[in-house]
Length: 314
Image 1 (cartoon, helix red, strand yellow):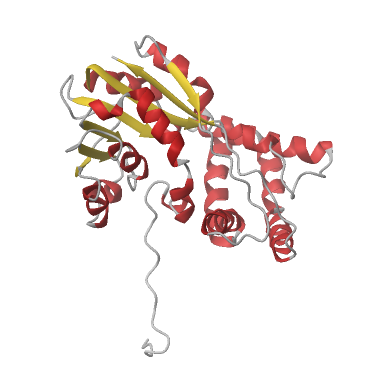
Image 2 (cartoon, rainbow, N blue to C red):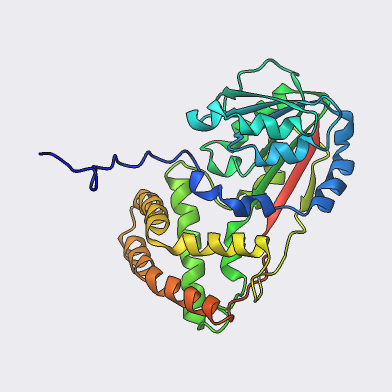
């Protein structure tokens, strides 16, 4: 069968790398710069110049750290996913503007391919939450950091999001609000049962540091809570609202629902599977509600999330 130039056969889309669907423009607005300046002082980053970024992705996090470290900092960006481990030319160029150098490497966080005491700083952002054995990874991070160096991990409590009010849920019934929390909790338990991590690992992170052999564990919370309010005119608000809409749209929603269905299957609970199917069936209505509120200038949210920054020196 022949095809015309007007209707060429399109190849199937390439599979996404790990978490690729979450790496939109909103990611650049996760942190308040002055908060990270303060954390850099607390962590004494200006005295360090060797950084290992575990599960680097697009290096959003290590770029924030490197620009607050000593001049001439060298960053090793390691990821298990081949796409992120390959890097691209634009990422080292961003580091170079801050006087830092960058190299990419593929590796497993559970078995870091480095000798003991190799780095001043070892860090990760929203990585341990996706690991089958985050404690093993933390032990590895402690092993490869130098005496006097620091391990820094950032992880969320995603369950908290189910309890944060916005214009879509502020007037919901008790049953509707409980359904939202039940759904979030089933996602948590299902992901863990599937051996794919814990979505709200942040709450457990200080204890994991202690079990990994760290003393003097320190915890902080991100102070980022910039509200999304009409007229939605600034770039940050537009990027964050575009992300919210994308999560409900067909392609992105189907990707998420496929992940959740896999997790729920691991629970082997028919009632949970039936509940999740009913919850997913309401996604088009949630998208329509948000779209209508945005068009009317009625949508609002607090812009808040519960993100832990946990650290300890070796």
